[in-house]
Image 1 (tube, rainbow, N blue to C red):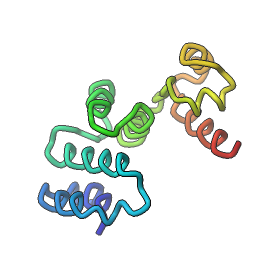
Image 2 (tube, rainbow, N blue to C red; image 1 turned 180 degrees about the vertical axis):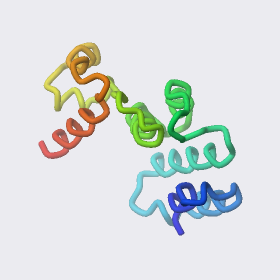
Image 3 (tube, rainbow, N blue to C red; image 1 turned 90 degrees about the horizontal axis):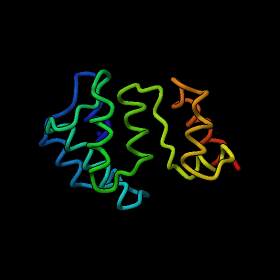
Image 4 (cartoon, rainbow, N blue to C red; image 1 turned 60 degrees about the vertical axis):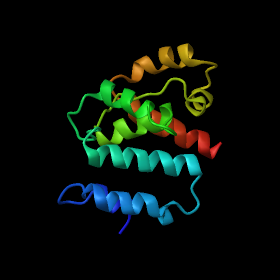
Length: 136
């Protein structure tokens, strides 16, 4: 059983003890950068302890802000989490360098202006731009 299995089980998230065992084990992190593994463990623990609600209908701004305060969680990861866990279709990290490259713009402000036409579905545009950047 993986940490993701514990958190996203059909019966609901596992208990704190189970998550602590798996988060401390770290065998699920093979091949991951240390900071990414620590970020995932921090998000998992905050979710199970009840300090972070990753459910549709949760406050997007507050959740995004709470994620950014966690060690190892940057704007891109926080946005991806709220995009997927909270079903936020307008999530769009304008500071993301990959999005800027793929959109052919040179900064946050220009990307924000460019992306206005995609509202309220900018999260889908972000996914396409990330893929385009990876394939370039």
